[in-house]
Image (cartoon, rainbow, N blue to C red):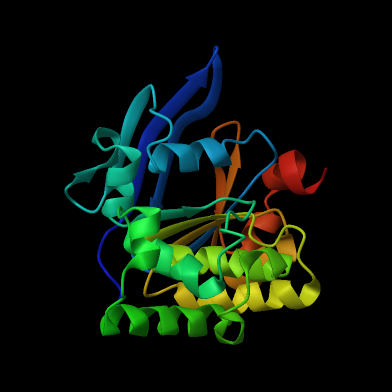
Length: 248
């Protein structure tokens, strides 16, 4: 894989729920191959932002572009996946009664049915891709382990692997290290850093030491819009960020 050229651009995106502005004229860009971390207090609009990008929520106003010619607001959720955007939620959702290998095989299948997928023979290139992803996520030795016996961190890595089977250009990752051991956090940091460049990666996270370990650029959201951005040192020393988030 090589870095691709689709830039994500949100411009003046506003989303209201019963009069409350979850996003308030949010403007944000993610460059191809960039690792971007988004932080902010609860209710800042981080989840709503990801919902807009993935088609789950339609904004009241604003634009959401992927590359020069893809209007995300005109696409359904499956169509957004098809153009190269994958999302990993905070709680891992692997198939616990399937093996690690079968989980990746199923993710590769896309629109094919569950039973048809498990009965079908996979091609040599598909087998190669699964092996490649197993290596990337560090689960080659667990390929025959059932999802239900994996440790919490391993389930998170498997779900990232399931996203990688679709070869997305942009990955949205929500609080990947919540509940992890220090060793799992370190491995997750290595994994996500290895993906940047070949993929654009947007990580929403509260663990500031983890954010520092992976991000060159950090964006801080508050009340639905950007209040600061830059490297970790810059945002940590921003008086407004300290007031609304880090100082709490």
